[in-house]
Length: 289
Ligand SMILES: [Zn+2]
Image (tube, rainbow, N blue to C red; front, side, top):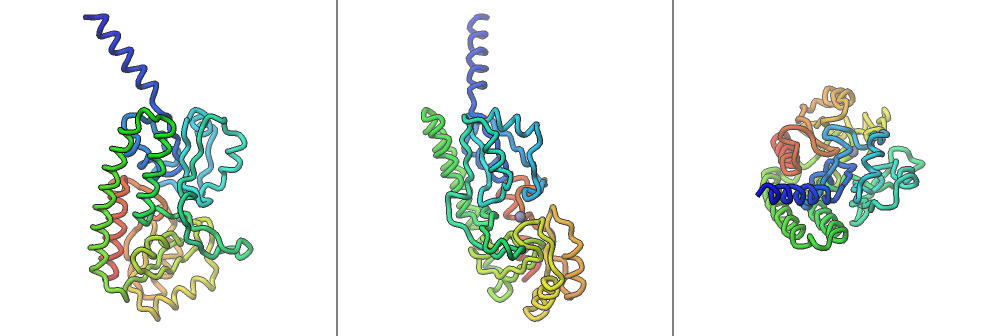
């Protein structure tokens, strides 16, 4: 009896050691990997909730985790500017998947005119893209462990159903807001994919990266737009300094609409993708209607 127990324990630990090690450079891909991979993956989220992914630089301890990973997941669309450097030093056994590079991008003018048009990396604000991403991660895990195909497929299907439910909820909530009130003023330009899905016009105070600084002209253009378009509210972002947004709110006569999660998951309600999206949509619709 005792030896059987030991045998079972040994088998269990063998199985645990057998888990696919996934390193994730985005809070969004961390959730997807956990949902789809379930008990067969060990996911290390290197970019933690509340950390600015535009400014993130991997530390030596992060590089250690990347070394040990079988699969590395990143946002893609140039969010992780350090990846080229990382790739040169990374070991060959990890598959690096820049999830967002596998579906179409919205493009936007860079704040720095020398950079021309750039890809907008904030793809997860469209639930359709989340569904694409879940399938990409599923297929990647199946390639790594074909024996677990049924398990990963079942998990992915459950997650896709959850995302579908979220999509319906978002559509119904946004229907409360008349089309001519769908105008979004936020700290940095992160909500294009959301805007395209739901017919919003965006006025981003900064550019596509939180590291861009708005020019005086941009600030005064936005104040003018708020006044002429009669935009009711300006939104802050969870990991942004609201200094400029506050000044714009004051000067334009708009109100503070609340705080949005622009760059990934946060704490509390926003610790899951579903909760984060419901928070953003509720905040936007309730402030603008
Ligand atoms: Zn951003």
